[in-house]
Image 1 (cartoon, rainbow, N blue to C red):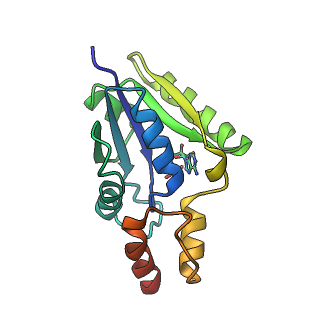
Image 2 (cartoon, rainbow, N blue to C red; image 1 turned 30 degrees about the horizontal axis):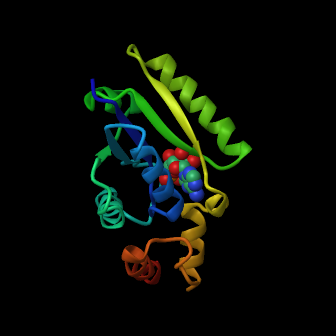
Length: 162
Ligand code: ADP
């Protein structure tokens, strides 16, 4: 049986911290689905389709990965993809508290075998979040340390429209 994992998130935009989790978790499963949350009540810089394109541009070199949009319950998305491993990254104690709630909520909701795997952030990206990237971009700061080169221009262009 193939192991299929899902790495869900907003990815607004995808950062080097996300890329690190993607590359490390892609080695643990046969297939990794990156689930881009189409979250109507969260104000994002990029539409779900744009966030998907930015991810695809960034990780074009990893081949057991598929990027998909989803809304609604994560457990339903898991089932649609025959996946039973949720991958999440952990940076801090505050991430842990939130992530533990999500993991237990999802486990309780699922009527199939479902586990969440936490991958610790690499020390270089412990501080990094999409919101820091948006903040730096909106003040014209250098994005090289935070984003893969392929998408820097897209994020700079969006910052100018804001
Ligand atoms: P969400 O809105 O679901 O938190 P994010 O795109 O902010 O979406 O994050 C998706 C996942 O990636 C979360 O598990 C988050 O903890 C993790 N993550 C975000 N940034 C990093 C990073 N720098 N290092 C490791 N994991 C990260």
